[in-house]
Amino acid sequence: MELLSGRRLAFAEPYVSPVHILRSLAATACAGPFMLTNEALAARREGRIGTMALLSCGCTAVAWALALGVVLIAIASWATENLGSFEFAG
Image (cartoon, rainbow, N blue to C red):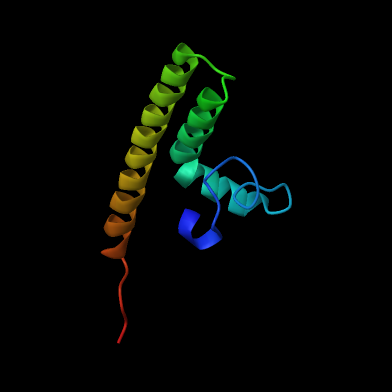
């Protein structure tokens, strides 16, 4: 996503926009852990958050990525089960 837009992943334009809500939700759901990590590292460099807050953001990003993986595996499992139930009339 960063390569396509030429900007760092963040909770800001062009990734998150009030005009494109569905696109913003999809981008945040899929790239959210990376966005959170980038934002936390930038805040740490600027001195806006401490080490404990950075560790908290890191743990949240890991939990988010794991939860996203579980959801994607469940969707893939559901999709493959349903593919076998379609009957092709020929």
